[in-house]
Image (cartoon, rainbow, N blue to C red; front, top):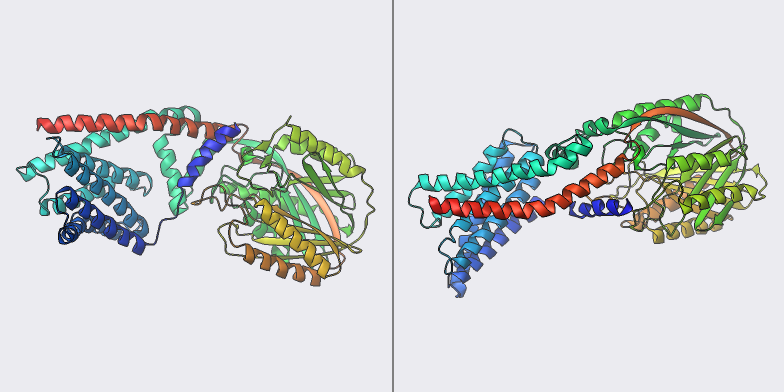
Length: 590
């Protein structure tokens, strides 16, 4: 199954940010000029002036209609952002130019080479139609705008002396519309074929799924949640709350056993920030950690946040605060390192395999870890630190050897003798603008017992590069030493999928802006140091129901996507070749 996930995630390399419109317009002129020069060379004009004249002719044939097409699309439908409209026209110019050039190259060897020009018009038409229909969601006007750009390119090609062998405008229109019809039919045949796996497994057509996905990617719309709700199921899960309260500090450690995905603003992707906002009144710092759950526990809708917040508030209402004493043991068993904050009769336990990755931990295994911990304390939660992004895709399932290492590490953790003492607590937060950080930013909690200190740095990110984790841990140790403490720090991430949009799914902290993060951590550390004080503590757990993807559904979605892509790779070239041959035959009969 992990291989299937890796195959599906390879597609995210195509998620790119479009360039500034000015750069795209320059690219249109440059590409048009280049095609003009190449056409001149093929036609025998190799002198500098002839090449320059050919380049200008290329701008006339390709550049002007491309820019006019994007302007008309943008002015008539403002939803078509000019950045996207211009880039669409740029790709169109490349398509037209390629077929113009191919027709010229083959003209000495094939009498029917002029048909390639019409094939280019057909492909460009269906390309526009597909993009406008699926990405721009122009269900009613896609055909109109696709025809508009085709006519613009045809007019400029006619003005430049193209369409040799076409005697009348009526004949030209017939051939253009024939080319459009053939490739449009091919497009719908393609959608009919690849919709089979989607219809069978996910009860949604591939066209609708792709359209809803792109509407989220481009416009932030949430139509895709309707499909998630169709396949989702209700589950019962838990949330654990730990509260620290003093004169200078109020903080909540919140561990909801749900997954913060699937991506963008869909499902639970923004829950880390939304939970923090809902519970952060009266200056309270809210730390929302990554519980032991996989993508099967992705909420189907962002509206499910109400159930999570309500469960958190019920747990908070049952908190009983008392003077707090702490110990913070840690141990290693096999590849797993377990750490705990044992506060009174509660335990906050976290696990990591850094610098090796674990990705996510199965909820069933998490429950087993909690129950093992509860043999030694009244209240416990377990957290996946999710702090080593290596690019590998894996998860810790029930029966995994890593799972048994985590169970044994938990037992070993509670066997360590570490006397609980009164401690000082301080916390701070910082917000940074970064494509690798979610809206909850950075949060730091310091626990000082005598001359020993534990620092917990929680980052609202989808993982962290192992080398940067080490750098931050060393920074925390250095900052603690500067203040007279033997400080052991650890970086944890929320695994938020809020940032997994255009850049795809691998956006670990440390891939950019390291200096800004380190500076923010330094400021937070000294801010939290100034606020160190004795606090009272209490914890509570609450069960609640929520609708999530459900057991095996993430695997089903991944497998279906891979099946569609595999089918597309086979069917798409066959349909395009068959359509082109059919069109060449039909054009020869006119």
